[in-house]
Length: 72
Image (cartoon, rainbow, N blue to C red; front, side, top):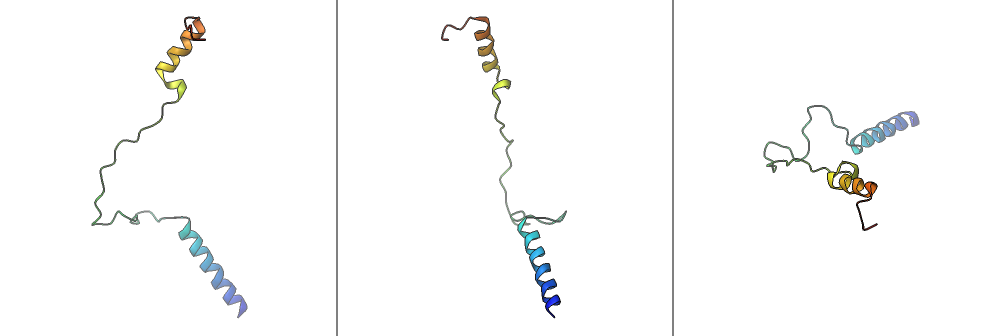
């Protein structure tokens, strides 16, 4: 009897943990994406420009290396 209760509790814990982690089955409807939900169009995500990709930063570093920068 205790073994049956232990198995039932274990299965319950596994199911709740699975749902809590947000596991979704492929093709399952996501919350807020139902047939009546209206969503704003998704804009293109803006990504941050790293300093080594910023042309202005690179130009400033180049000027400092050449000794053209008087600000120190």
